[in-house]
Each structure stands twice: as C-alpha cells, then as structure tokens.
Length: 89
Image 1: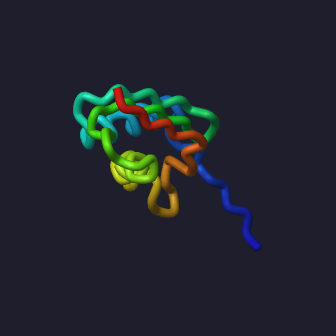
Image 2: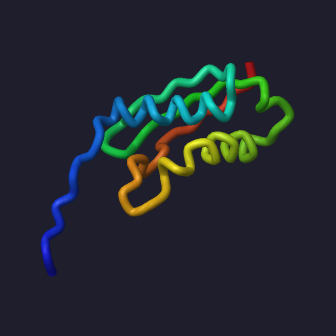
Image 3: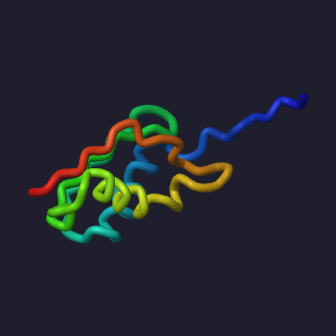
C-alpha cells in the first residue's frame, strides 16, 4: 500500500469564514458564529427569525443545506460540525 500525503489545506479560520459567508448568503440578516475546533471540525451558532415555527431538525437542515458544498467531495474542507445551535431571536 502506498503512503498518501494529504495537504493540510487552508487554515481553519479561513474555512470558518467561508462557512459564515455561505450561511449569510442563505440567511441574510442571521447572526452567525463559527468556531474552528480542529482541522475540518467546527462549531456553529445561528440566530435567525426564519427558524420561527420550524422543528430543530428543519432548522439544522437549513444550515447544513447552506454549507453542503463545503462538506462534499473527496477533499472537502469541512469534515464535521461538532455542534450546531439554531436559535430564534
């Protein structure tokens, strides 16, 4: 078996900025906080009025849908969301 060297890729802070921008595009006006937890791992907190009346699962699906492109593919920069908090203001 051959040894594969994987490039570390962009800094976690840079990826956190991309996550925040993607969520902001999908949910303009939302309050968003993204915290890097390690390579490819993040915690996200989103407060948005559009969550009103939605189940927690539906709220989280909206957030995950907005960052799906950052989580897909063989070299996706986001490996896992360790914690996702969705709140209604």
